[in-house]
Amino acid sequence: MAQSLLELAFLFFVGSCLGWCLEVLFRRFFSAKKWINPGFLTGPYLPLYGFGLTFMYGVSYIPVHTGAAWADKLILILIAGVMLTALEYVAGIIFIKGMKIKLWDYSSRPGNIQGIICPLFSFFWTAAAAIYILFIHRFITGWVGWFVNHMGFAFFVGLFFGVFIVDLAHSLNLSVKIRKFAKENHIVISFEKLKESIKDGIENAKVKAADRHKKMKASFLFAFKSVRPLQELLTEYWTLRQKNSVRKDSGDDKGCGKDKVAINSQIESGCGENDGKKSPRDENGGEEPDLQSGRAEEK
Image 1: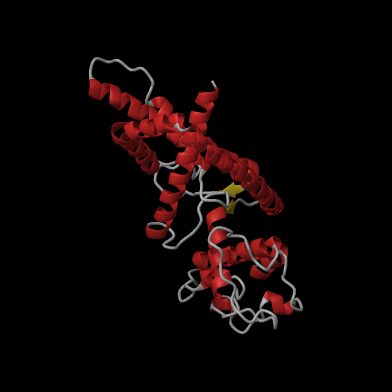
Image 2: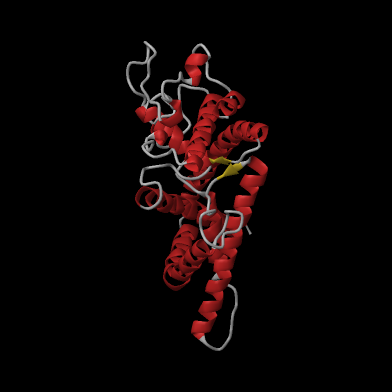
């Protein structure tokens, strides 16, 4: 029993770390086109992939005997594909309903369900399951066998889970603050868009305070590290997204493609209906407006 738990812990460790690497590369070259630390946690691991690898490992041992080897493999692949899609849906629901956070969004994809799952990515998960069952499972089995024969490596797996638990506590504490903001304003926060906004703001904003001559460097791992309070960053993120939404609806976003560039200098460049107006910060004596005043100003 203890050995089985250690094997599952090892699989979770391997899957979480490899999955994080895949997501970083996917965001860099296909989606966000920039280096962004994916997921809910700070460290280089994604629990969703850890559970996914563990599930696929278990599915590979389901006894299926149809009399044809190809049919057996096909059934296992379909089972794994369904399980991965279900895992993605359950994880998405937990974050959206429980934490008011959206880690990914398939709303623009055809056939999506609540923006959490869609046929395209279900196909990708099934394809990943096929690659695993047909080509990778034998190697993972070999890794697990090596781990069983070298139990000293369990120390590093234990170290991983120690760091993981501390990271989880830190991230949950952060999510409580985000959830409070989201509930007060009846919204769901896009976690990745929030990270992008903070990163762009840090890298492009002109810091005016005398003791801040130099630009801050955005942290890849610690995406929420900033000299400004989280509440202020959330308010500006949401206000900016509202303004962008209004411009899109009214067709005034032409020539305003740099909106996402700077949170700190938001709307000060003057675009469309804001020409010649003071920024909300100036009108409030240097203080940031709350979300409600931001909404009123837009109206």
